[in-house]
Image (cartoon, rainbow, N blue to C red):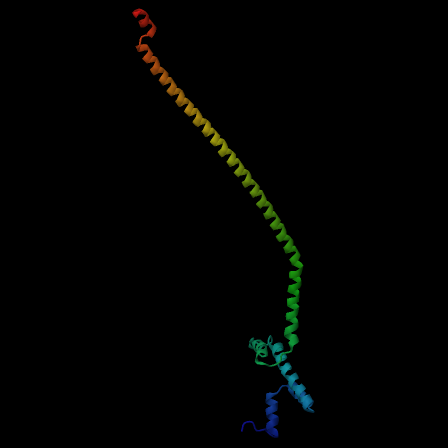
Length: 185
């Protein structure tokens, strides 16, 4: 029967040991059910706010962790203590990103146009190099054909000269036909 209400001096001693000055002041206002509900809600918020306020005062930082995690346990935290700074920080980051977006976009476009220019220059250089290579190959082919025809001409000339020499030697060995025919007649 631990849920039994204490009466008299025991109740007063219990309240004096377990409540703060703020709770004692808030208990003076108790009038009706609506005011009691409002007081409970206010005390819950004040308890969490007191944790946040006293977090930096003590030697340990466990109070701040407890204050932050109390919201996760379903207890009310004054939303303005968490939401307003968060919205402000997100707003500042958004404004900074929007202001710098134009500069970044201009830098990206400048870099892209420079890259496109370099790409077109390299494409032009490649086309010129390909044309020069084709011209050199065509000229090399013509030179090879000319060298081939000259070699063929030289070979034909040498063959004709050797044939002429063979014919001349053959003619030198044979006497002329007119001299022997005239002698026999």
